[in-house]
Length: 326
Ligand SMILES: [Ca+2]
Image (cartoon, rainbow, N blue to C red; front, side):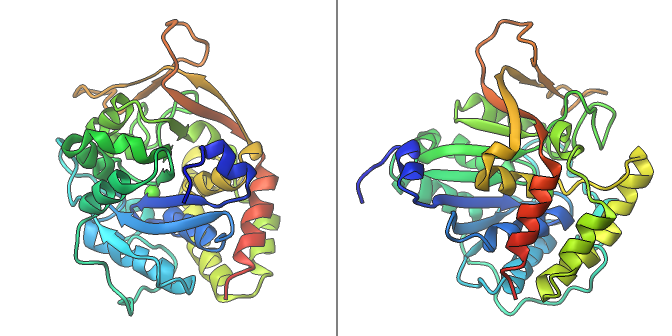
């Protein structure tokens, strides 16, 4: 295959070569179904899992369930890091339930994970990849990519873009007043990824808290009448309650699914290239992302930071894609 630039590949209508790194997780499963329903645009090479919302064995099982529900069991799942780089593990079972999937009953998937680890998979795949040819969507703590970068810094060459669900600037945090969960769960990993110089897009709470469910939006998904839509509705009906109560929001965010919408239709979102600092010090602001939105520090931009998105456009796209599944 000739080595086309990312822009040339898009112009030629070629799909993005994608790996999703994830900690399912209610919103992760919606994101996985969204991506798995979009094969013409996203060539999903693998799903890699990490501990986060729940422990690694459960996030891996839930990733296997998501591909089973999408009828896409040919997509391999690799289990990754069971703990963060440095800090004590934290989980979010209060939000995602003991099994990581609120509102539904889980089972043991027919197909399990691959024998090798997510970190090995990332190193081998990115090392062998054409320059800037692979996109990595990171929907959980960034531990797996950080471990891969520490062992093999040269793998940056294979990455077109890393799109991270994480961080919060204008919105404030969701696990502490300052920090968003994925950054708080492994701030040191996020710092390693940031320092690697890889092209990075952040999809923070600043934008995900503007893309909220509503009764008509959920009704449109429910009206699809397929198994995927009924799973998504059962999960979301449970999942959005806590955020609506806690923040006094009229609907709930589906954070990780915004990453997939951004990959499919970036024009739904607006953001800025800016300089990001991550606080990795112990203390009340551990895991805080300081996004220099106004360029106050006059430092070179190191991320593209999304600040706003078209909520109805997001739900129209998600609904259309879920309608393609069984
Ligand atoms: Ca997640």
